[in-house]
Length: 207
Image (cartoon, rainbow, N blue to C red; front, side):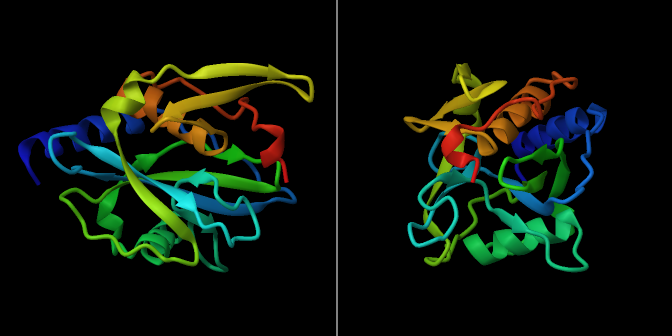
């Protein structure tokens, strides 16, 4: 690991450790995990995270922007599920040593509680995305995540604000937008008390 990468990973780990993670009971919902996978990035763009465009053939949320992740298999915890999904979707084999920290659970309108896991892949890993699940993988610089100005919109269907996070020329909505917004605020900016479970999804993502 280069010195800058070591310093960044330690900064992120420290901020996430200081954040008191909020967990949600499943109740009647299913448990899922998503991974914010950090890499050094190509060229001179600096550290990045991996953002996927879901394959158009998927039954749920086809074509939408998402972090690698999915439902926990029986007997799995969130970290094991996140590592498995990163391997299945991106062809990237990481171990538990890649863990940097955790963010708050995010309950979705479609009946899931999502647990976000921050992982450090480092270097410039070779990816082999699954064509059945992933249309494309983009390296989004952390600098772009910090520079973008989030929007909080009102909709008639809910009293909660809908978050839009501008990335790569697109507006990323919750749940992905909410998870990335908290990563931006807590891990990158050190605003360790930031919460996002009150942020709403757009109506098209409620199913």
